[in-house]
Length: 161
Image 1 (cartoon, rainbow, N blue to C red):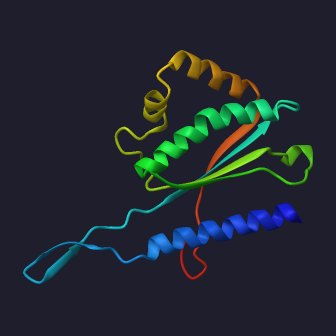
Image 2: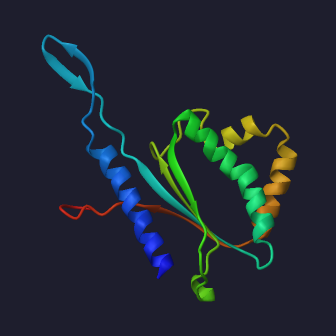
Image 3: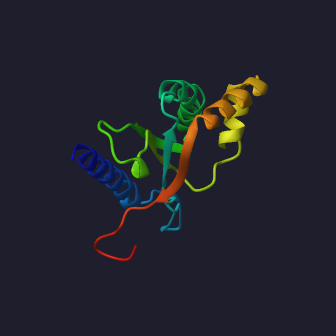
């Protein structure tokens, strides 16, 4: 029950964040002889990363993920490409077929990263020792038994999806 409540709460928060961003009035870019042109509000992109780790290696996996992926997401947030992200871990357990260890919900400003803000570009900026970065990221993937990235969207209850 707690897991269901958390997922529902996450969905509500994503919905509110996305809805407020999408319904915000665009700001005028310039005025010319009484006519106002506006800059279109970019559509936010919400993505979910889900990870299942090898039994007994959850702490090692998390240390590597935090060292690299969280640092990259934090930097992308500072740069403005990532608007927000939240990491979840279950409080209870589920059946093996639906088990997951970490979920990351990411709200991005757009589908494509601006120049210099992609994951690879930020990783090169933050971690100049790319050999160590690749080795430790490979280790994290060795400890990952299942993973998926899932673009998700908020269902508009009053109109089309």
